[in-house]
Length: 99
Image (cartoon, rainbow, N blue to C red; front, top):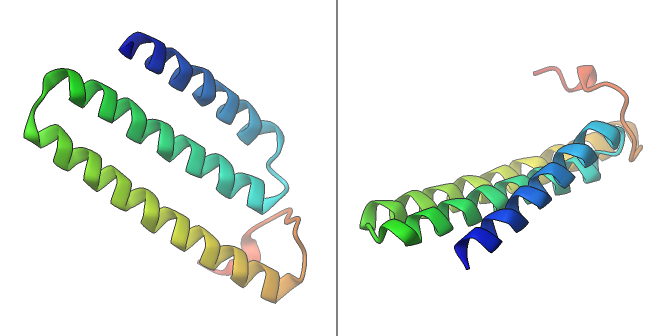
């Protein structure tokens, strides 16, 4: 069962990387790809942590889930900032954000 879950996770990981490299112009697609990658990291850590049956793996999975929520909130805030500044869905360069 766990090898099948890991195989599915690796398939989606390569799909997300392919999508990340070839659909980099639309910012919402980038955000969705990063969310898919963070979900896959969470699923792999849950699968591997479930095999070890330790309490530390449960806490690590919760931290990964918290970081993915923070990543999604920051990404949506950046998307709102981009749309207010340039009124475009497609961005060619993020230099106008002035980090």
